[in-house]
Length: 447
Image (cartoon, rainbow, N blue to C red; front, side, top):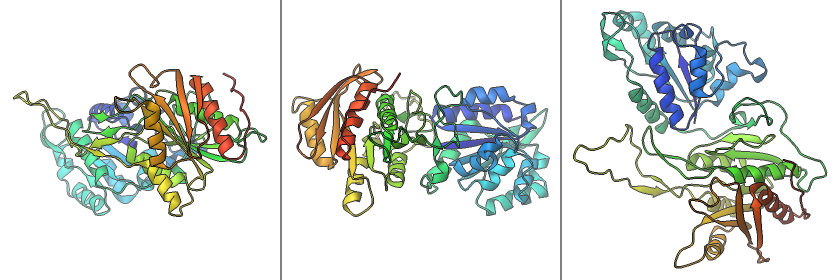
């Protein structure tokens, strides 16, 4: 999830650093937007170190990316914590003297404001009226706690504990319809060597590859990485996927001349330079991204390690150890079957890709081998090709080498490939080119 954390000039700003840690440890991308006054309490270096993202405060910074509009448009949640009386007043009348004010005017996602101030300020008729006005516009304004304030003062106006704020934010997002990823949320990943993080946006033209490549003029959607299913504000269910194989496939497709739209989940590697980038976290987010971006593409390669199950119930607060020593019971439910749904949508007339490639990470058991499970999955899913590999603690996930067998729905002989994941990525894209009617062996990319 893309979060903007606005921080205004109150002494409670130091507690927002703890809130930021909760957000990032849950796997979310957080852009911190402090007001100039907030930097008097917590410096820019702290925010950048904790978020792993560049921090800007002024409307005229990063003008080339239209940053003052982009941040609000792309956000899926905006949290202003602490929100001073002054910031509440500015937001109520729509003032935008700084970057945070612009974010609040352009955001269409849920907005949570967390007031913190002296009691007299909180109970002042002007503040009361401003809070009522903001709430009438759909902004959630959290009531402050009552307790020790700055100095010797005590009363309502105390900044709530970060875990309470984060729980409220999670509840707010869960109860709000999540917009599908739109064109404005797409990114072009930075070129190799760029010091921006993997989520940094670039407005350069997407890489198109060589004009004479086997996939020249084709659009290929590639999914990669693992999905994470939230259990409580701190924990999630995930898997060991590194995203390496999906990145290798995307890079091979780019080298073959394709325009690549890369949908990335949790990964331990950088996304492919030159691909159009969409970030997701959960299986539902991946489902929505595929259903939004796959129509009209020539091929879809589902290399992501998708969770088959998620917690049936999300806990608003962190699950604690029971004093009686009993263990919590976590009930699971199925996640959407994205591969099968995409094939079904195509059969129902939606303009889904004519070539869909799935991946089958299998372990095999006493009833069937890895390849037998793979053949059954290919028939069940209805895709054109299935890449099957055997996984385990020391196999495939996170490793640089792999062995796969490619199975085909049209009955042609299986194709095996082994080596490092770059070589296997080239082998997969070679078969993809053949399925698209552009046969020919692709060369290994330069390292």
